[in-house]
Image (cartoon, rainbow, N blue to C red; front, side, top):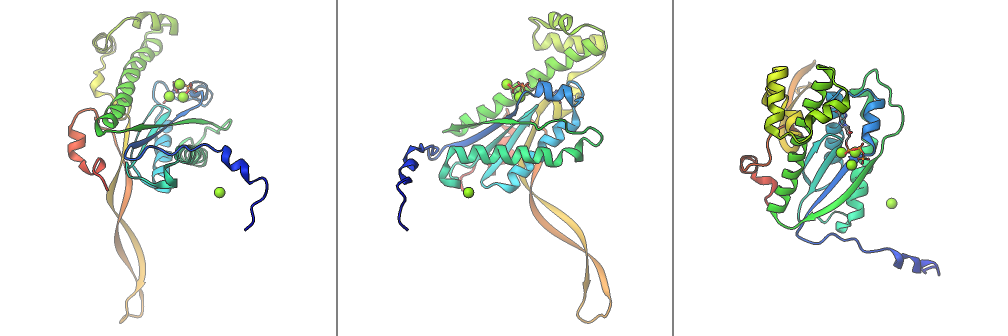
Length: 268
Ligand code: DGT
Ligand code: MG
Ligand code: MG
Ligand code: MG
Ligand code: MG
């Protein structure tokens, strides 16, 4: 086909191919979710509906897109790890980023009512996205450790902060002053001595965030079938093995997780 004289504008497009042999990580984060959480009455510091909706969206992303080996989420963010050898859209960063973010955002709206039954969605939420390449397995593990450490630090802080505000009646400013300069041990101690809370017994989803990995799961469904020699239909149970993105709330900083699921980092 003949080319039009306008064809040259294609050369203005930049090459954003991701370097080969690197893990491609796409992280998205809710835009101004401080306000979004306030306006939609999220419970503090953790809202189960919001966290489960985030995970549903991440599962949808993993199921709909190609080559994602795992995901990790906490608060209003999710990270998706594409396999090193992925050649999806010729490894173009903009394709990874925009497909992840748009699929996630549309899922957030689509599934909202399944999680927030009597809380209407008041305005369209947005998410930012970025792509970062990690050349070694250690770099990738350190990246994920960084996000999980961030989850821990924020959750410990927020747990004490909201106890001081909700239970002890401190103003947010007073609670902030009280926590100024405290270490993790001090925060654990306040929780234990003043609120009888052992931080280690707080839900794992709040403390560790959510890891999504591919697992084979058996799905049992009932089917009506007609056997060749019989005249009537019969209900039979059919077990199908499906590969699903399954949520875990475990430590990914130590070696145990990576030893238990070596296939995540394995090539192929
Ligand atoms: P950004 O990302 O720069 O556009 O601004 P934000 O406001 O989204 O800030 P970010 O992402 O650093 O922090 C996440 C905010 O989302 C934080 O203000 C608390 C809120 N958030 C996330 N999950 C929950 C939750 O389960 N409950 C409540 N109450 N708030 C939450
Ligand atoms: Mg931010
Ligand atoms: Mg945000
Ligand atoms: Mg965030
Ligand atoms: Mg097209």
